[in-house]
Amino acid sequence: MSHPAAQDLKSHARWVPWFHFVAGPILLVNLVYSIVLVVKSASWDNIDNALVGVALLLVFFGARTFATAVQDRVIRLEEQLRFERLFPAELKMRIPEFTREQFVALRFASDHELPELARAVLDQRLHDKGEIKEMVKEWRGDHLRA
Image: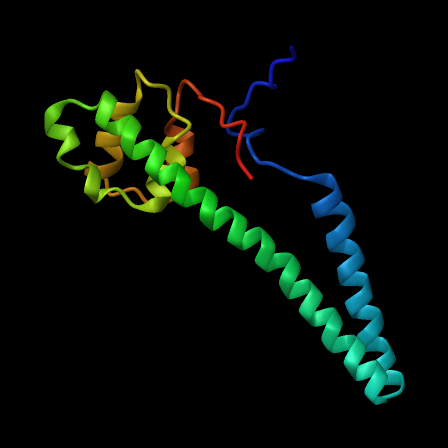
C-alpha cells in the first residue's frame, strides 16, 4: 500500500491536472476565440457561442468554489470535534470564536501543538490562513481535500 507524500506549507496545495491544466485552459481559449469571432462578425450565432463560452467558464469556477465551500464546512466540523478532544477546559469555551479561515488553517497543526497555536491565533486575532499556516511547526497533512 502506498503512503501519501508528506505535505508542508509549500506542497499542500492540490492541483488536479485534467481540471486545472486541461479543462480550464480549453474553456478559456474557447471563450477568447468566441469573442474574437463576435468582434469580426457580430452574428447571433457568434454572440450565442460567446455567451455559452462565458457560461462554461462560470461553471468551471463555480464547480471549484462550491467544492471548496463544502470542504471548508466539513473541515470546520472535523476541527471542532478535534478541538473538543484536545483543548483544555478554558480553551474549549473559546471554540465558537474561531472563524472558518482559522479552522481551515489550523487543521495542519499536529495534535500536540494545536492547543497553544490555537490560543495564539485567538489572542493575536490572526485571520490570514497563510500567516497561521506559517506558524505550524509540525505539519499534519490533509490528503482528502477536494
